[in-house]
Length: 337
Image 1 (cartoon, one colour):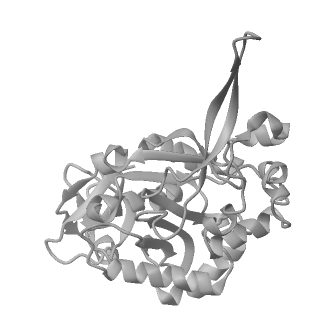
Image 2 (tube, one colour):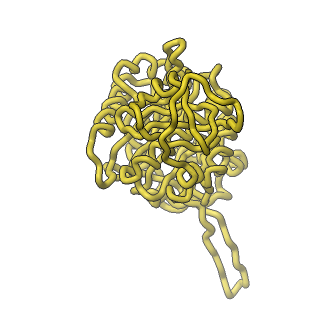
């Protein structure tokens, strides 16, 4: 059985393995033991913290294959970004250049360095091990976070963002970085990503040009990469868009990957999830079944699974109730897939 649960200290070796397997493609999952240990510590501290008003809490979860005792995926949520350091993005807007004397009126697209997403909650660190990468597991890993948010709404900001990795080649070279960022730093894109992960975007972004960057001055490859996700991110982008996320012309300052956003209370999994008290049995009727994400209502003991049941008359098998650590009469939050 695959279970989503909070990241814990014994998961450090498995987390290191996932960071290595990711090949440095994820800023928030660098292959750095100290950083990964801090990721666990922040998760554990945030889970145990009594939160009435969200701040800089961070929550990370793992997907555990209980049959083989393996950690095969990781995902996270930041309650609010940019509170303890700048959170930079590029906002794409047109700049107007006009001359009434020459009767010329040009609208030129430009990138403006901004901190518009400061204070927003963020979905982050979504990664599945290779053999487990499929639509079903992606649904479980990604949307389980939304059930956690729905149950613990006070812990998160009203706006939620998700940054998708931008275009890069087989050697992890970013055309946007090569055309812009590399001129300001004597390092390659992989190292810049790594340093960002173990420190903060502000660590490098302070050296970026703060004046508008005119898009026509970038290489053709960099221009084509603006707002485009890496090809393997297409399923993630599609899932987020089905939830209600939209792209509003904000891109990452290093690889120009798109940032998607939504109001939390407008997301599909938030608005359609429901609280109920399921019956628990050893055998379930095979009629009217559909795939459903089911989570308990706990914080530090949060658990989420994907199963098949009738949402109108939810019944869990005893093994599923045990996996969710349910006590008799306990409520669950569920949403149809």
